[in-house]
Image 1 (cartoon, chains in turn blue, red):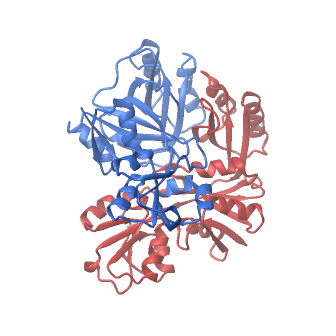
Image 2 (tube, helix red, strand yellow):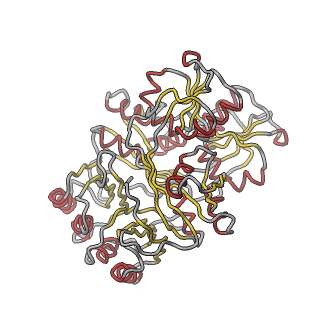
Length: 273
Length: 273
């Protein structure tokens, strides 16, 4: 089984793949989220894993947009803790470290640690990619912020662990495939829909869920790119689209909405973002 | 009047400041969003301008989190079109350009242009900062993607305009100050609230707006960082918190919510994200 993800080996997305599929799965690193969708659509990969939401930075709009564009389904969710480490080459003496490389978001998330560490920060494209680059160039005056896994893969040294200001840093990933998941009795469903922009229209749409006692776990309005004053809503609820109550709610929603796109139903992750 | 913003001179945030306050205002560049809030809180700046939402990438969670932490108010909104240009030094011959610098998000937004341009991409921390760096180092084999304004400020050449794949690239900014804005008859209000996590609780909360015919312009659920299974909602509606109908809706919401934080009421921008 081959699973596509975006990033270099050691990326948090790759950890999500192993967390969901187990360590014996084969992985296919891709440059962009779109490439992940393409690989699955063309059957060059069995599944893909893409980030959909992070507890500190919010929804990944690009992922939602790609779901609107492609005809692929969400068949799983996986939530992993993002735990940043300070990483150097094995031979590096910590006192000789002058610069710290990482993705701007990772640098920002480790602000307090870095303030007391007091080195020059160099923003880069990628957390795991920074570790790889330090290794390849044999940089001895540098450190990078990335995952434990990245240190392991490139044979590097972990100088400090859990260096982020806020430990509640979780990323939720969607597992995508050609079909969604059969009902398990403990499922969630993700949809995107749009309703007319007038008072009460969202409220009326949500009535279909409230009157059936359906628990929402996410709602978000996003302006559509195509037209001013038009919104898409990202909505997750507890339940499977193939079970009667939830099927009825979706059918009722369709009669009130411009459109409803079902991204898929899938077993709930055991943890939460 | 002094207005703080995050970024280098030429940043899109700086354009938002001038768009809102006019070109004679004085600006104070800050390194981080937090610094913008600090400057206003300590009265070292009269106002601050921070991004809250982008049409392509969604809400800026960091900004919302800072509003929860600080006791400052939203007193205005301003929406600007993000229009990326390809920029070089004046002496640069386009054929000698080998690399393109910019923030990863800007590079991603200009994917199609860059694919046909076919140069090496170098992700950096900042759009305007890339132009400044190219100028300072007199790089003649490089281009950067940034705003027209950035080219102007650093005396650089615009080689191509509007190079983004999707022209609907708008960023919405909040103007923050010690007080919000008095009613004008054409206002919006932004709040953050939290309700118990059970079926129908969001629906019941929204009833207070629907039954008063109040138009919502944004809703978004965000997991709180503090506790699992707890959400904050970001909500915008049309109306001013000091007008009776809207005041009543907020009071009624308070009786159903864990907490309601009013970010402020302010005149609606004439355009939309």
